[in-house]
Image (cartoon, rainbow, N blue to C red; front, side, top):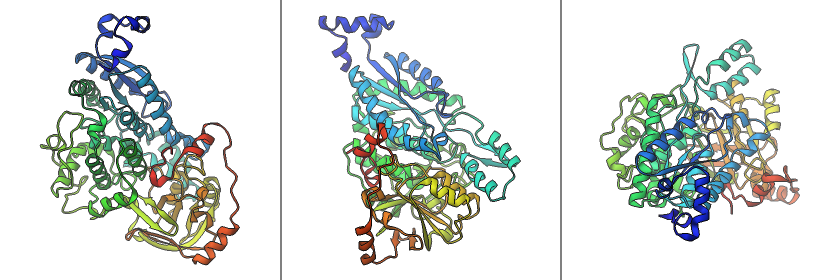
Length: 552
């Protein structure tokens, strides 16, 4: 066993004494040591219930002959961090989580690991750690929140953010806002739409690192506890067979994840995270590969924020296996990839079927013939930009309008709330990329304000920052190179005409090369927004969004 280096032989008597100081018996020490990585805390709604998942996993490990040992990681609630300095600290935690797990797992020589994340950056951070440490591992999340009910409609957190804009523009009463606040998030769990957390939990299932059901079983269902027990049992089987994360996350597995990503219409953040995950697995992936997938995979699902359908509805319709079975009708998946079940993808989905074709469209009758995410390129984003195509209104798939440029999210929000944005405008928010932010903040507040004011039919937003999975509308993020690296987005001036063609993947600033060269010669370096602490170190180390915003 890997753990023998900390428990076998005379020389390891001091180590055994420390295990015994923690209350372990010789019998427990002699069994495989299984690290259980939990991000349970009292601040994230998706994580307050993870103690129950931990207990389930521990029981599964114990039943299968292992010794479970729990240790924590940090986690940030993106919703609470949204719209202020706190959002600078969201994406950056992904690297901290991966680094901390690497330290703990290798320092204590765990034989295998079970990861218990749920929300946003915590999920990809743990997946990256699993691939880096590369001992038998299983992911089991805390599960999605149930949708809220308000005035006869299902609602989610994105509804809440949009309501702020509606109140500001006089389209909603403050009394209704107060009622919505009470009802929109009714249970624990990751926020109930196809936002970043649920996107990544679903894709963990597709990658094969999580058991079937991981992405869609609601947090408050007892089935989630049973899944946790099965995860504990599964990791012991993987250990017995010596199946490691890099055996599971192959190039074909990544392509399967991208395929399902497009079919589901996942968060644009999934592009950022899958790229980073592939980097840890030492696999080639870039925006061109992703765009190629988007071109051939139909969009089968429209979940919130693109509709009033939520994760619980996807669960009832058959879950991720049902989506995969539908995609398999056109041979869009590699069925030979091994998974945490010990079976292949093909074996996992053999008996799966769609139970509700209003939630998961038939492969022959998709929402669109192309995927839910699109990559755009042009002189405004030579290295690429990303948009959630499935959440864009048809009338905004092609748009041309004058730019209104802002050097921070705060400046943009002030202008939007001050009603300085009018129909036809293209809002440009820059110096919010991985380096420029630093931290690549999510622009949910400005996009939600635009939607809440009824401007999503005529106003686009472009940024070198990123978006929440809850964002809808013509919101184009991840513009690369970012402004802080001298990208052309830094050269945009008010009134410049920007051409957006999501259908054909084009994003262009309609300004001559000569004029851009002139502006570049006059461009003054922007002072870093943060000069100390972790964010300053992050800005020095982080790469472009087009390569996953990983450390160089």
